[in-house]
Image 1 (tube, rainbow over the protein chains, first blue to last red):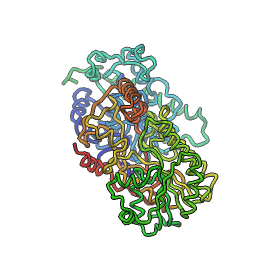
Image 2 (image 1 turned 180 degrees about the vertical axis):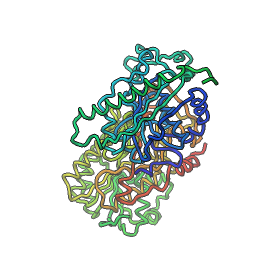
Image 3 (image 1 turned 120 degrees about the vertical axis):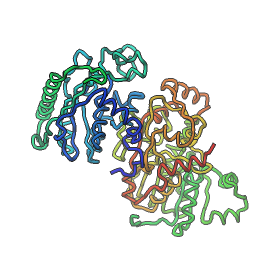
Image 4 (image 1 turned 90 degrees about the horizontal axis):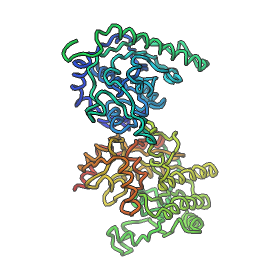
Length: 264
Length: 340
């Protein structure tokens, strides 16, 4: 391993331990007071490294932020892997990496798992973040099942997770594309607050959040090196469906989408 | 430390009076097992000694630099390969340390290309003709290039992608490719390339990164804050010394220990960080470069935007080399050296 790269304080993936110290209280208040986060199924989390597979939504990756802090509150670590569009964006990419997110690639993921740290993946990718509010709570396709192959390669279980609230916290109303033709930013997100309030526009709306962690899936027991791509895609699809039905249940059981501060 | 099968007695250096060469000579002088140091440089050694503040009296020079045999040679000129081979065989050199590279990008790109590419070709021909048993070449981790899809750290398994638009970087890639081919064709010469992290500090030497980071106001790319690692020149020289005395072949990263974001580095050096939007940054850099007011080509902005951190594990495992100055120590040292 690369212990020689590690600074006393700074992580080689760009995570700043001071970030948690400085903004921990704010994030805690956000998660507890504003989002009123409920987490169920914590007992399903394995002891060793694993891959958390979640749905991805909202104009800004609040789901990754909430996951990181919720785990930190439980003295645990999670490394969300985010798409290039986020991690290479100015400001946002830097902040996300200081928080502990990592640019999604098989190589980076294997290295984190190799350090016995769990990762969180969002197989919907950027399509998940760029789904507009009227398509909320509906998962888009899961791509080629790269996360299943990753689990096979690393020999770690997959843990599906349904996250409800990200799209309400930063609802993507529409996308301004015309400004960005020819640049590598594909669009400017438009939410009720952004870009109208400038940098303050990334502030989250007070939505009720719920996270449900599902029982782990032992990929090794289902697939081996001889499995076809169709088998891989099928497993990915079944995880997709599990998350979708949990999400539907969570949504039905939620009293109200938005909450007034202090209420519940 | 790994057992050394051939401790070279006569070590030849190209670029001997350069940034790394001067320091390596001092290390080799202290090594009793080294009998002769053949110092080859395009510069006149007397001129250099004068610049370093040494008197011109040959007796004093001899006392200061015993066992150094200096030769003035322009590696880029025609016939340099034959002349170098003659020097190497007449001195009986068993090892050649090829350090004749530019440590900074320069406006004289043609000259740079001649030195880096043709110079390396000549050095390799000479190493083959002499012949020497051991060939050590210094390279740089900038040859990997600064790309948005770089992994969290680069190992020697990753290709040298270089940097399109920077001749300086492409020449480094080319030199390494030449060495790789040479090593395949000449199994009798054991070849090693050391890819050094960005070097920072070292008294009186102001290399590219040191100059950039010790400005009063350090321009950075707004919204980006890549991780940096640095190597103190003394460590780079020790790495060359270890490489000279080991059997390891191939390419190795010589990486600094510890990483810090650029903004923290600037803070630690007590400089002012001036974030500039990327489009202005590259436009300004391009005009400053064209006006020859700045020695940073526009494409170098990418190195201030994306991380190009490398892992030095392979070299550490192969020869037992440990960096002595981690990023904390190094920045404290450099901050004192360049106190405003």
